[in-house]
Image (cartoon, rainbow, N blue to C red; front, top):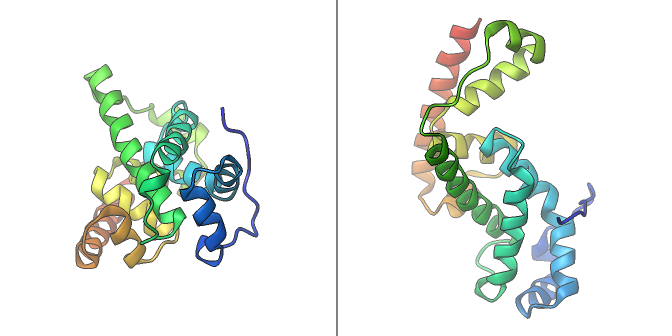
Length: 184
């Protein structure tokens, strides 16, 4: 298991072209540095997209293994962080498909009594509502609001137009508002 942590003083990789070049050349120390810088961001994104914790570490490892395997394909058209988040999104999509195929049944919700014990009021209600969003809407909400990426960055990661991101965000906000009003 990959066990490193990124500090709060992470620098944008665009200010470190030497790291990018070393990474693209496949230098092992460069991969370690990339993991150290971006593991926290990737882990947070995966956790928020999957909504269950058991598979998060496995998926994060898959992301960095995929990055290692495809290091030569990184063209520098986006930041390393953006590239890694895009890989994470694809891995989360695959993981969700595997999960639902294995269960063939919808995920069971906890009883209201259990939820009231476990939740931290509003924050927990928001987490529940975000988990209920469709995949496309959940992805834009996580990336834009929780990962605090710009619309342009989200569009690059998902490979769609900024206008499409705006539409998905609008729809997601509307659904979240409806779900949250029903919870109160």
